[in-house]
Picture 1 (tube, rainbow, N blue to C red):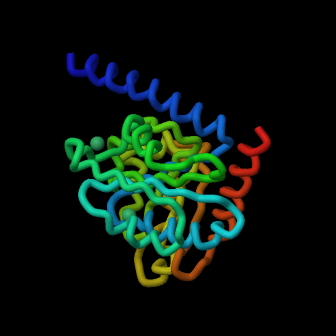
Picture 2: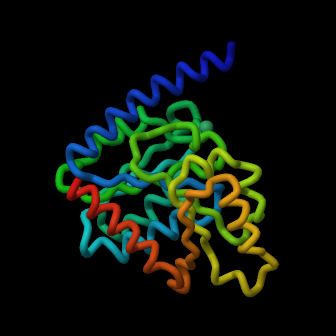
Length: 222
Ligand code: MG
Ligand code: ZN
Protein backbone atom coordinates (compact mmCIF):
# COMPACT_ATOMS: atom_id res chain seq x y z
CA UNK A 1 0.00 0.00 0.00
CA UNK A 2 2.63 2.46 1.03
CA UNK A 3 4.57 1.77 -2.11
CA UNK A 4 1.54 2.67 -4.24
CA UNK A 5 1.09 5.94 -2.40
CA UNK A 6 4.74 6.86 -2.89
CA UNK A 7 4.53 6.06 -6.59
CA UNK A 8 1.54 8.39 -6.90
CA UNK A 9 3.40 11.16 -5.11
CA UNK A 10 6.41 10.72 -7.37
CA UNK A 11 4.29 10.61 -10.54
CA UNK A 12 2.54 13.85 -9.55
CA UNK A 13 5.93 15.38 -8.77
CA UNK A 14 7.30 14.30 -12.15
CA UNK A 15 4.47 16.10 -13.94
CA UNK A 16 5.29 19.36 -12.19
CA UNK A 17 8.99 18.77 -12.87
CA UNK A 18 8.22 18.41 -16.57
CA UNK A 19 6.37 21.73 -16.48
CA UNK A 20 9.33 23.39 -14.79
CA UNK A 21 11.72 21.91 -17.34
CA UNK A 22 9.47 23.07 -20.16
CA UNK A 23 9.65 26.61 -18.83
CA UNK A 24 13.45 26.44 -18.48
CA UNK A 25 13.81 25.02 -21.99
CA UNK A 26 11.54 27.69 -23.49
CA UNK A 27 13.86 30.29 -21.97
CA UNK A 28 17.04 28.32 -22.87
CA UNK A 29 18.11 28.21 -19.24
CA UNK A 30 20.36 25.44 -17.93
CA UNK A 31 19.43 24.20 -14.45
CA UNK A 32 21.87 22.32 -12.22
CA UNK A 33 20.68 20.57 -9.06
CA UNK A 34 23.48 20.26 -6.47
CA UNK A 35 23.03 17.56 -3.87
CA UNK A 36 25.19 16.16 -1.07
CA UNK A 37 25.41 15.29 2.61
CA UNK A 38 25.42 18.27 4.97
CA UNK A 39 28.87 19.83 5.08
CA UNK A 40 30.25 18.55 1.77
CA UNK A 41 30.89 22.04 0.52
CA UNK A 42 27.96 22.78 -1.81
CA UNK A 43 27.75 26.42 -0.82
CA UNK A 44 31.50 26.95 -1.06
CA UNK A 45 31.51 25.28 -4.48
CA UNK A 46 28.65 27.54 -5.56
CA UNK A 47 30.35 30.61 -4.16
CA UNK A 48 33.53 30.02 -6.19
CA UNK A 49 31.62 28.90 -9.28
CA UNK A 50 29.43 32.00 -9.31
CA UNK A 51 32.45 34.19 -8.72
CA UNK A 52 34.17 32.70 -11.77
CA UNK A 53 31.17 32.72 -14.10
CA UNK A 54 29.06 35.75 -13.17
CA UNK A 55 30.96 38.01 -15.54
CA UNK A 56 30.04 35.90 -18.56
CA UNK A 57 26.70 34.29 -17.61
CA UNK A 58 23.45 35.52 -16.07
CA UNK A 59 23.08 33.29 -13.03
CA UNK A 60 20.41 32.82 -10.35
CA UNK A 61 20.30 30.55 -7.31
CA UNK A 62 17.50 28.66 -5.60
CA UNK A 63 18.63 27.80 -2.08
CA UNK A 64 17.00 24.91 -0.26
CA UNK A 65 17.44 24.66 3.47
CA UNK A 66 15.30 23.20 6.24
CA UNK A 67 15.55 26.19 8.53
CA UNK A 68 18.13 28.93 7.90
CA UNK A 69 19.04 31.54 5.29
CA UNK A 70 22.77 31.37 6.06
CA UNK A 71 23.85 29.85 2.74
CA UNK A 72 21.80 32.40 0.80
CA UNK A 73 23.39 35.20 2.84
CA UNK A 74 26.86 33.88 2.02
CA UNK A 75 26.05 33.99 -1.69
CA UNK A 76 24.35 37.38 -1.57
CA UNK A 77 27.70 39.19 -2.07
CA UNK A 78 27.56 38.21 -5.74
CA UNK A 79 24.48 40.30 -6.48
CA UNK A 80 22.80 37.49 -8.35
CA UNK A 81 19.10 36.77 -7.77
CA UNK A 82 18.64 34.25 -4.94
CA UNK A 83 15.37 32.67 -3.88
CA UNK A 84 15.33 30.91 -0.53
CA UNK A 85 13.12 27.89 0.10
CA UNK A 86 12.86 26.97 3.78
CA UNK A 87 11.29 23.54 3.87
CA UNK A 88 10.49 23.81 7.61
CA UNK A 89 7.77 26.29 6.73
CA UNK A 90 6.14 23.68 4.49
CA UNK A 91 6.42 20.61 6.65
CA UNK A 92 10.19 20.30 7.20
CA UNK A 93 10.90 18.21 4.15
CA UNK A 94 14.45 16.97 3.86
CA UNK A 95 14.46 17.50 0.09
CA UNK A 96 13.20 19.92 -2.55
CA UNK A 97 10.38 18.86 -4.82
CA UNK A 98 9.11 20.18 -8.14
CA UNK A 99 6.23 22.17 -6.60
CA UNK A 100 8.68 24.06 -4.36
CA UNK A 101 10.75 25.00 -7.40
CA UNK A 102 7.60 26.00 -9.26
CA UNK A 103 6.57 28.39 -6.48
CA UNK A 104 10.13 29.73 -6.19
CA UNK A 105 9.87 30.67 -9.86
CA UNK A 106 7.12 33.15 -8.95
CA UNK A 107 9.80 35.10 -7.07
CA UNK A 108 12.41 34.88 -9.80
CA UNK A 109 12.45 36.77 -13.06
CA UNK A 110 13.80 34.04 -15.32
CA UNK A 111 13.76 35.89 -18.62
CA UNK A 112 17.33 36.56 -19.71
CA UNK A 113 18.93 34.05 -17.32
CA UNK A 114 21.49 31.55 -18.64
CA UNK A 115 21.94 29.34 -15.63
CA UNK A 116 20.14 28.46 -12.41
CA UNK A 117 21.85 26.58 -9.60
CA UNK A 118 19.64 24.79 -7.13
CA UNK A 119 21.29 23.96 -3.81
CA UNK A 120 19.24 21.08 -2.49
CA UNK A 121 18.78 20.23 1.18
CA UNK A 122 21.83 18.41 2.57
CA UNK A 123 20.78 14.77 2.39
CA UNK A 124 21.91 11.86 0.20
CA UNK A 125 18.64 9.94 0.35
CA UNK A 126 15.32 11.46 -0.81
CA UNK A 127 16.60 14.39 -2.92
CA UNK A 128 17.64 11.64 -5.36
CA UNK A 129 14.00 10.57 -5.76
CA UNK A 130 12.49 13.94 -6.60
CA UNK A 131 12.85 15.40 -10.07
CA UNK A 132 12.63 19.19 -9.91
CA UNK A 133 12.88 19.97 -13.62
CA UNK A 134 16.66 20.28 -13.69
CA UNK A 135 18.89 19.30 -16.62
CA UNK A 136 21.86 18.15 -14.57
CA UNK A 137 22.01 16.48 -11.21
CA UNK A 138 25.38 16.77 -9.50
CA UNK A 139 26.40 15.08 -6.26
CA UNK A 140 29.14 16.63 -4.17
CA UNK A 141 31.19 14.42 -1.88
CA UNK A 142 34.11 15.71 0.13
CA UNK A 143 37.28 13.82 0.97
CA UNK A 144 36.38 14.18 4.66
CA UNK A 145 33.54 11.67 4.13
CA UNK A 146 33.72 7.89 3.71
CA UNK A 147 34.88 6.39 0.40
CA UNK A 148 31.94 3.97 0.66
CA UNK A 149 29.20 6.63 0.23
CA UNK A 150 28.39 5.49 -3.35
CA UNK A 151 27.75 1.97 -2.07
CA UNK A 152 25.64 3.19 0.84
CA UNK A 153 23.60 5.69 -1.21
CA UNK A 154 23.66 4.14 -4.70
CA UNK A 155 20.49 5.84 -5.97
CA UNK A 156 22.03 9.28 -5.51
CA UNK A 157 25.06 8.31 -7.58
CA UNK A 158 22.91 6.56 -10.18
CA UNK A 159 20.61 9.51 -10.87
CA UNK A 160 23.46 12.01 -11.13
CA UNK A 161 25.30 12.88 -14.32
CA UNK A 162 28.12 14.63 -12.49
CA UNK A 163 29.99 13.98 -9.26
CA UNK A 164 32.26 16.52 -7.63
CA UNK A 165 34.90 15.30 -5.19
CA UNK A 166 35.50 18.40 -3.08
CA UNK A 167 38.09 19.65 -0.58
CA UNK A 168 40.93 17.80 -2.32
CA UNK A 169 43.42 20.24 -0.73
CA UNK A 170 42.89 18.18 2.45
CA UNK A 171 44.01 14.90 0.86
CA UNK A 172 47.58 15.29 2.11
CA UNK A 173 46.46 15.26 5.75
CA UNK A 174 43.83 12.52 5.45
CA UNK A 175 43.91 8.78 4.86
CA UNK A 176 41.21 9.16 2.24
CA UNK A 177 41.56 6.71 -0.68
CA UNK A 178 40.32 8.70 -3.67
CA UNK A 179 40.91 5.79 -6.08
CA UNK A 180 38.64 3.60 -3.98
CA UNK A 181 35.93 6.27 -4.15
CA UNK A 182 36.29 6.45 -7.93
CA UNK A 183 36.00 2.66 -8.22
CA UNK A 184 32.84 2.63 -6.10
CA UNK A 185 31.34 5.49 -8.10
CA UNK A 186 31.98 3.68 -11.39
CA UNK A 187 30.59 0.50 -9.90
CA UNK A 188 27.19 2.08 -9.20
CA UNK A 189 27.20 4.39 -12.25
CA UNK A 190 29.74 3.76 -15.02
CA UNK A 191 28.60 6.90 -16.87
CA UNK A 192 29.18 9.31 -13.97
CA UNK A 193 31.47 12.18 -14.91
CA UNK A 194 33.76 12.86 -11.99
CA UNK A 195 35.48 16.14 -11.10
CA UNK A 196 38.12 16.44 -8.40
CA UNK A 197 38.56 19.94 -7.10
CA UNK A 198 39.37 22.25 -4.24
CA UNK A 199 37.40 25.46 -3.95
CA UNK A 200 40.09 26.69 -1.57
CA UNK A 201 43.16 26.14 -3.77
CA UNK A 202 41.34 26.31 -7.11
CA UNK A 203 42.86 22.99 -8.22
CA UNK A 204 40.65 21.18 -10.71
CA UNK A 205 38.23 24.08 -10.98
CA UNK A 206 38.78 24.84 -14.65
CA UNK A 207 37.46 21.46 -15.82
CA UNK A 208 34.33 21.95 -13.74
CA UNK A 209 33.74 25.47 -15.07
CA UNK A 210 34.32 24.37 -18.66
CA UNK A 211 31.72 21.65 -18.29
CA UNK A 212 29.17 24.15 -17.06
CA UNK A 213 30.02 26.57 -19.88
CA UNK A 214 29.60 23.75 -22.40
CA UNK A 215 26.22 22.75 -20.93
CA UNK A 216 24.98 26.35 -21.09
CA UNK A 217 26.25 26.74 -24.68
CA UNK A 218 24.52 23.50 -25.76
CA UNK A 219 21.22 24.65 -24.21
CA UNK A 220 21.44 28.03 -25.94
CA UNK A 221 21.95 26.36 -29.31
CA UNK A 222 19.45 23.53 -28.75
MG1 MG B 1 25.10 24.79 1.92
ZN1 ZN C 1 13.16 14.17 2.06
